[in-house]
Length: 182
Image 1 (cartoon, one colour):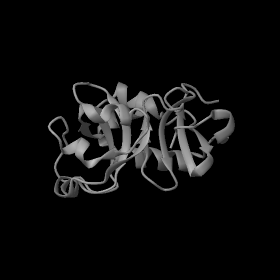
Image 2: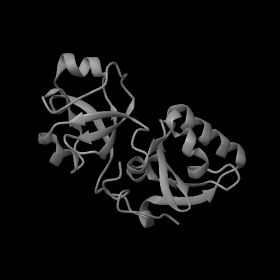
Image 3: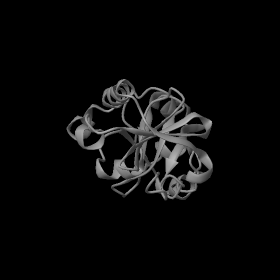
């Protein structure tokens, strides 16, 4: 999603949103990630204006003091950026890819089932398809990517073939290297 992202080319508008839309975004984010409740006022203050950058392909990026903190596509789920995920690591459900998958994930490839079911991989029980997940690397403490499950974890274990996670945002992509959006 952000493999070839440029603020100058892809951000159409960046504007403050109405308070009703701000409450809506805040409630959706907290509904999806209840673990963020203690940090909500710091990330999305009620009194401060919220800025949303609208990009090509119906992507919205929620900004806090110009720094991207959440994004979504169309009416899909809001997902934290990797910068936020590194500050608050246990916000999302996590899966672990084995060492063999790391170079492919860091180049933006989707995660295949064998990368999660092999000896170094790990998944929580019974996550549904369409769930946003943080992709951890075997032996590392911080997430290397964020993706959306294309099939449930039970199906991944049973089939062990095909794309398991569609890549959305990864270390080194252009959203990662873009610390500030005006």
